[in-house]
Image (tube, rainbow, N blue to C red):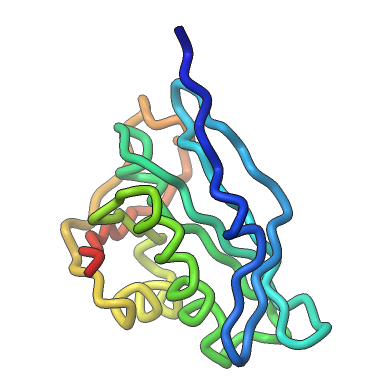
Length: 150
C-alpha cells in the first residue's frame, strides 16, 4: 500500500511583517524527488522570488538540499532569501524534521552567505555523483550544509 504524503494546509500562505509566501505548487514526491511545497515570495504586491521546502531525506536530497530559493535580480540584496527561508523552516518542523541539508554551487557567494546566516554548518564541498538525479557533466562543485532545527 502506497501512503500519500499529507500536506498541511495552514502552510499554504506564510507571512511575517515584511514578506508573504503563497503556495504555487505542491508535489507528493516519487522515488527520487521528495515531497515539496513551492512558494512565490511577495513583498507587498511585488513578486520578488521563489522558495521551496522539500520534506524528508534521501540520497538525492543530500546534493539537492531541502531548501531551494531564487530572488529575482532587481530584488536581490534585501535579505529576501534569508527571510523566506526562515519562514519555511516551520513547515519542516511541522513535518517532524530536525535537520535539513542546504546546498549551493561553490561559486555562489550570496547563496552560501544566506545559508551560513541561517546557522547551517558546512559539511563538505564536493562534486555530485552521476547517480544524483540532477547531475550534469558541467556541474560545479557543491557546498553541502547541515542545518539543525531548534
